[in-house]
Length: 446
Ligand code: AMP
Image (cartoon, rainbow, N blue to C red; front, top):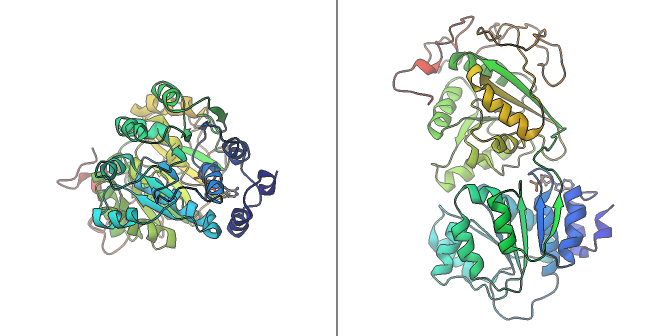
């Protein structure tokens, strides 16, 4: 199947050719004809499947036919849970809509109102927005939704989790009833099914990557850890490996992300934190640096990192396990982008075995534990078969490092700026692991 078979406008095909896309992904091949036939759609597809283009391309195709109305409001509204995802959808619409000159605007929380007022006062075709801020503008009468033809709810399950549904219900109540509605969600179980029923009319359903997405291009590894010091040593070891191009390290709290980023910076890494307490400007600057390769390591929390689409991310490291199993899928999906392969590594303590099991049940993929010679967990854990450093067992292993020991001469963080008393990040050859920053006064990893 090629894009030509999909009846898309030649200007869109031109943009796709420029983007280097040769054929539609499965979600695109299935969703585009249904959307272009005018059906409502319920599509279950994970990030990384090409779902953004699956709705953006037919939306742009709609724009190729001029609207009879003289009003200036958007013809397509895309609701998304986070600012980062809004940016990603906005970028995609601009990229694919380059030759049909689609006017795309993104309206998200945390940005100044005057600029948004100005953007909304101009004629526009596609509006990408987070629900809360959109509702603010609607209530102030700043958006004309009279000519709206298509509503897209992207990552609807996430919007539900984040408490956006009351806002979404108010938004949809104000939209023209004669419209096409598309809903993309990782799952359509429970509450999300009720909402879909309420918002969609006789929808077509497509299920591409179910929850059990295989992520075949992502190698998933697991390391059992004894304590924070052990985690830090492993992280140190993993990040200096030559095959790490760029890495996202996930922590469970914003504060923890800041602290870890500071420590990695002191240890000589080009690193930044990304979390929800940062201003939108700071978040954008950080993402731009990541995209340009000015940052090699991003220490992030779940919500902030959703939607990050940077092809250079070779590794995702779950320094802390995610609270929800589905976040695991979103996290590891930050690597292996744009047809590349990726490596996702999780640290888990013995006490987190239940959480691990939930992740495995959700993904349908068993995480085999691996060990790195010299960094084996000291606490007794029933299972992993140790393998020699340099071995590559199925689903685990670590590429060979000649020394075979993370504490080798060139192995530690030894930056002059390291505040761990010059011991290196995590210290060397210590098994207590407490030389690392976890013991620093006033700092906690909770
Ligand atoms: P998404 O699932 O929408 O986040 O897209 C994942 C990545 O796939 C993005 O980097 C897109 O630019 C890329 N992509 C989307 N559609 C195609 C396609 N048909 N061929 C190649 N890459 C694509």
